[in-house]
Each structure stands twice: as C-alpha cells, then as structure tokens.
Image 1 (cartoon, rainbow, N blue to C red):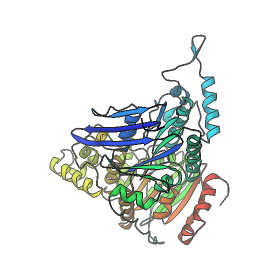
Image 2 (spheres, one colour):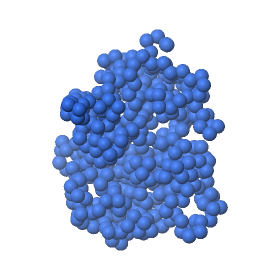
Image 3 (tube, rainbow, N blue to C red):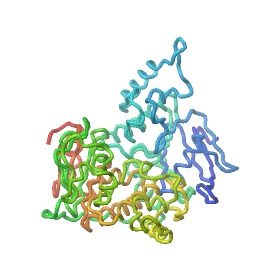
Image 4 (cartoon, one colour):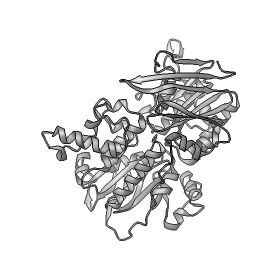
Length: 487
C-alpha cells in the first residue's frame, strides 16, 4: 500500500464488452479531501462503487484500504419504506428485552446531525425525503457507523449555497481529524475550494492527477480534452409576451401556501430555495402529480388545475423530474424511454418502429448521450447520461408551451450542462415559458431572466433585470432563502 494511504485502488471494469474503467488508479491519503472528476460516463461512480465493495472489478483489480468505508451515492441506498433510523440499524439491529430498540440510535443520529450541520429527522420515512435530505441522512448514517473514509458521489448537487458551504466545512473537519474524503463532483469551484488532490478520469482512464494549488480551467481542460463551450447569454425577456404558465394563490397541502407566479412566453424564471421549502410539492402540483388544495394553475390561458398528467402533456406541458429515476423506465431501452408520451407522433396505436428508432437516434445525437446505443437499457447509462435522456424527451415535446424543470443539470458534467442550458434557452426562444427549479444558485443567475425565492412555502423575494446581475445578487437571494431577511 502506498505510504500512509487510506485507500489504494487500481480498477478495470467492462459492461457488455465496453470498457468503463481501464486500469484507473486512485490513491487517497489520510487528512485529505480528494476530488474525483470527469465527464458523464467517465467511470467515476463505478470507481467509487468498486472502492466501497458494491461492484466487482475485472481480474487484476486491486482494492486496499485500512479503514471502514462509507458511500453516499447519487441515487442513495435507503430503503424507501423504512425510517432513517431503521435504515441506520439494518444488519445490526439493537434489541432490548427481545424487542427492537431504536431510541439510542435515533438520539445519536440527531446529535451527529446537529454537530455537523446536517439536520436529519431520524423518524422520517426515507420515501418522504427529498434527494438532498436523503443524502444528508446517508452521510450521518455513515458517520454513525464509524467510517473514516467517505466516498461522496455528487453530494452537493441539490443543496443550496448555504448548505454547500456547511457541508464542505464538515468534510474539511473530517479530513483534518485524520480521516479522508473522496468527493465526486462536477462543480469545479467546490472541488478547487476544498480538495487537496484531484484525479481526472476521461473515458475510463486517469488522464491527470493534480495537487494544490488547483485551477478550475486546467481541470476542465483535462476533463474534456479541450476548451468548454460557454453558457448561452441570457437575453432580455419580452415584457408583453403572453403568459404561458400562471399560478394563482396555489396551495399544496402545508408545504406550499399561496404562491402567485407567472411565466411568459420566451422567459426563463428560476425558483431558488433551501431544500425542503416546498419546491418538490410545487413542481409536483404543476406536473399533476400532487393535488392543488387551493388556487388555480393555467397553461397558456387554459385551466389545468384538475387535469391529468396526460392531459397536461397534450396541452403542451413538459416536466423534468427532480429524480431522473422517477422519469425513466430503467429496464426499458433508451429508444423506448424517449418514446414515452410521444406515441401520437410515432404512429399512434401502432408504433412505427423505424420512426421510433430515428427519433431516438436524433435525440441521442443532439444531447451527446454516451454510449450512443439506443438499444441499451437506460439502467446501463451513467446518471448524467440518464439525465440527458429526460431532458431530450421533454424539450422536444410537440407544441411545448411551458416547461417546468427541477434540478435539470443535477449530476451532469460541464459540457452537458452547457447543452442543457442552451436547450432551455432555445425552448424559451421558440415561445415556451420555462420554469427552472434549481439548488444551484449560480445556474439560475447565469440563465434566468428572473429568479424568485421560495421560503417556507411562500415567495419570499424576486430579482430581475439589472438587479439579478448586480454584485450583491447572490447575497440578497441567499438571505431570502434562509429567512434572514424579508423582501
């Protein structure tokens, strides 16, 4: 084992004859945060899953670690129907008098969460938690199990800026205490801010290893083998354009209380907020997946408050779900997933197979889905490439009048993010109203004409035009997000 390394790993892996990893080497030393970066499909998630013992590498793969390993994956591993504390004790159930005793573990989880700034409700069922809340719970569970080597796959993807800062501080403290962290992330500013060393994967091979001082442009060039395409410039939204999506006094149970919001044709409107302030419920209500308990929703002047999901799609609504696994049939092929909800344009009752194949190949090429094999099951793709499938399907719906996109670039590499942003801008330019719900405040500032803040189920503030690009915009939005300041 390398001198004082907590983890030394050399791994190869093939799926269906395709090399996902090719002698990829990762060495992690105690007291360090180690960044692992690369484009979607580069092999990052596979590498950390091999390190955690969840995936078996090819013959010749070597995994050597002297410490207990904790993995927090992109899509989590919590059993949905169990509570956080029940998940924490799986396989090591404590008993008292022959009965399951959870109170001590629950108290320990709550205390760990408070200690590290990772708020967690031990008695909440996993299926009721947002993706970000599940990640926090898994991190606390890993800490409770005594892990000194943490493998975190996109842990900040759905966290607000204040939460990101808190999590990075936690990771720094864990490393400084003698442990180590492997941070898989596409957010290079975060990697540069916290990592001591960085390993860059491209097409399954390690193409660069770097140590402080780290520079984001150099890392980005190593990731993509060249220069990145810039984000599209945000044009001025037309003030007199027709309203394509309108929410009037919308309530969704307790989490959303009296939201009034309009999105006009040609406009990109961002919704910012700390996770758990009603974003999930608001998106679900617009998409028809949660009942509106008061108020109305209109699509291009047509009331859709009580319409079905299919009815909303036919009226011109596109929906990018927060969790891509809820939007895909993972065991169905790429081409079948891209045909979901598109049957009328692909032949109706009797699907035109040739048209379906051409439709899929066109969308896969447009979003650079890798590998570009439309006969593969969606499960065979990396998380970022699965996200591209959802985006491609929703952006190309015929007669698209409005699109609600939740976390559209979560877990997506920088090049793909630029394509997705360009796609959202193109949908707006074609006359749709686009509502983007994102935990990435920098993303909203870069692509949106307006940004509103949702706090405790209500709109707490809004910035538009010059105010959105002012030097203090991020600070003002952040204060509204945390409730530190009223609009």
